[in-house]
Image (cartoon, rainbow, N blue to C red):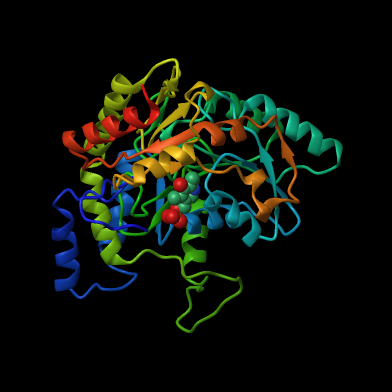
Amino acid sequence: MNYRPGRIFLSVPHLGGHEQNYVQKALEDNWVTTAGPNIPGLEHDICQHTNARFAVALNSGTAAIHLALRVLGVQPGDEVLCSTFTFVATANPILYMGATPVFVESEASTWNMCPTTLTQTIEARLKLGKKPACILLVHLYGMPAMMKELLDIAHHYEIPLIEDAAESLGSRYGGHQTGTFGELGIFSFNGNKIITTSGGGALVTANEQLAEQARFLSTQAKESNSYYEHTQMGYNYRMSNIAAGIGRGQLEVLEKRVKQRREIFGFYREQLESELISFLPEPKNCFSNRWLTTILLQPELNKTPEEVRLALEAYNIETRLLWKPMHLQPLFKDAPYYGENLSMALFEKGLCLPSSSSLTEEDLEKVVKVLKAELGV
Ligand SMILES: *Cc1c(COP(=O)(O)O)cnc(C)c1O
């Protein structure tokens, strides 16, 4: 990590101002723990903003994915169909469960799970006598996946679906918040996401039983006796009341942050889009929060994303390569994979540009200027 002054970061927290009020109240009232009014408050606010029926505040998005797999009853040895083009936090909880990820390739219009490949994968696993326990898909960089097609497949084969919406709070598909289509959805409030609690996450669902079960497991699976009685293995996954206070303030400015990130995407696109540098447009029905602006560099530029990243680094500008697909990770070398490596091609051409909502016009102009000079366009 490089913290030279004046650095232009990829994605940093951007406070709205009211976070302090919630945090200060928590400190004054001595609710400095994993209980207190900000927690149900944040859960209520999440439901309001996303139209989810139930929300459970947790200490990370990864914890939320783990609990989603638990409450769906995934067993050791089960197979979970997972987007290959994602951050490792999507797939790690599959390993926590002792289950096996089966990686599914993306399609080109959203970079998310390809419906055709999903059907092929399910058919192939069924032929081997293995019915997948669930589908775990991601809405990468804020872009909604092709939910209609994917849901139809999930329903047809009666396989429950979890949406990793960690990067897509504020994104909508057909007017509905991503994360609210599957049996369960998860959000992340990590410091680099569109809004933050400094670290945290949430599970959302329309199923009250699943929500209650997740809440129960997140607090060490403590039965409601006066003494400590346990019949199931639980976790310490609850969010703190301080973090939830930050989250309540942050949710107040979510729509503003979405607007700002979309404007940043618009600026870059206007300045840089050409035959040689391409952007991912929004397909019909998709509204992206544009968490990170990504570009693809065509081979004619004769520059790898890594060369460009290093060149910008010299100007104290942080950029990042796209996520390296899971099926190419040494960690998952034995996991089955279906597809034709679109994600690898994207990984080899793509770069994430600084996308913090707090970036100034000057910052953005500097990024564009340095980038144009480096690419010779
Ligand atoms: C950030 C992220 C997560 C995990 O969230 P944490 O709150 O950091 O645990 C999961 N999936 C994706 C795609 C993410 O980007």
